[in-house]
Image 1 (cartoon, rainbow, N blue to C red):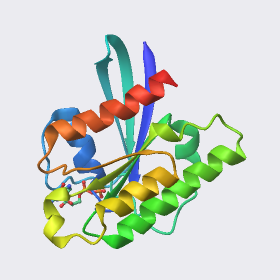
Image 2: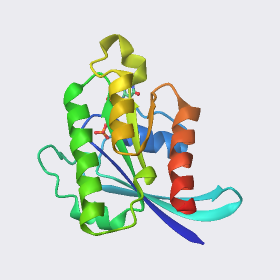
Image 3: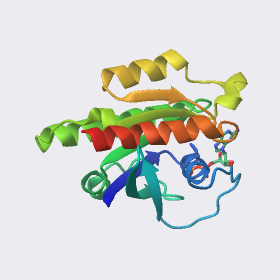
Image 4: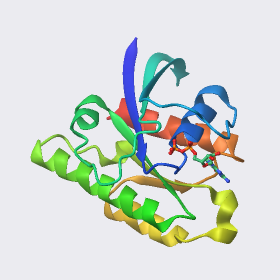
Length: 174
Ligand code: GDP
């Protein structure tokens, strides 16, 4: 069975746990109480192939200002980088994460698999409070050769599932 490892990263409150739990359970958990890092496991079928997926979600870990990411970069096969469209600071943090991932790939002379990175603008239901334009997210993704979408973990179940399946498919076809 194939093993896939995905890290869901972003600033605190961007919706990492909400997205992860939405994908795993199809439910939206408003307040996800956790004080530690979480690794979730799930068996899934991807295009007829059985996979064992592990998702790393740093949960309540405050990552602002701490971008070493060394463990995550070694561990993960792909990344979902989440920001909140109603919080510009979370976008700046997502940008710093993307640069960190790109630089580490270059430094390690790894086969660059930027496309196994998905930039997600979450909380699209809060577009009346929007601080980050769709075009800004799209441009950041294009500049870093990663996939991009805006969605709402609160309201869009199918979009969340589709986004995760796209990044998993990219990993398995690389
Ligand atoms: P994390 O720290 O990145 O894991 O963020 P959480 O998943 O814990 O979410 C932080 C807060 O944002 C919680 O109160 C969630 O209910 C809320 N939240 C997450 N996703 C959405 C969304 O798509 N829309 C709205 N309106 N709130 C969301």
